[in-house]
Length: 184
Image (cartoon, rainbow, N blue to C red; front, side):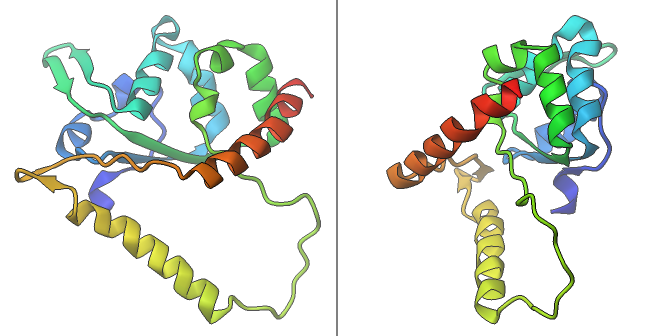
């Protein structure tokens, strides 16, 4: 899995080494320590033209990138999963500064997770064997997808449909939290 991780935050999509996108048809993981910098840079460089390109990498639609000295690079199914951290108040500020993040559908592509707002106290609890086993099964299942993604000898992205019951839970959560968070 190490060959499809980007460990530094690119200023723009055009700053990353595109070869891993070409060489990993199942996509890349971009680990960003501070999402605030990443989000701020979406509008700072290239006159804000990076936002549509990042949206394209979520959709897996084909991407053409023009590089000086390298010509046009074609990537049929680009995919970049971004993981990082940002404080809720900073995220709210960024979203208020630029409503395009909502109107473009960019924020709808994020799965936002936050621990409960309550003190976490040290204790003697340990992870139960069944919880650990479930986590290991989930990670191993995801990693096995790479092996099962061969079609005609080529790695091909999979589409995982969301089950109706899971979709309803996600919609309910989003309706309860997204709009109040955006305007608080």
